[in-house]
Length: 118
Image (cartoon, rainbow, N blue to C red; front, side):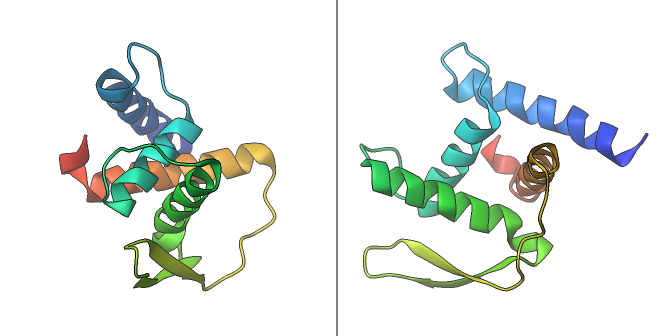
């Protein structure tokens, strides 16, 4: 089986599992799943977040997801417990579809390393 096909199948399984748990009957898209990963990595549980905090949560998730690929590295937790990452390698210029594939692959890898979350 080709690598892309394997990732597609794994992504769909993860998407279905998470959607059942958190989607309220609706299929969650990549952005929603990335946000949930950010909430998980923040470690504060679900609460009301402002717009800027939501963007920061998504940033946390993206950094965490791309860390195994060598783009980011965990740096420290600030006084409020928010994780901070530093850029290690510049992200490549990818087309929109290529970005989506990279993020889905990163989500699959994240859940392979954190099986207890799904």
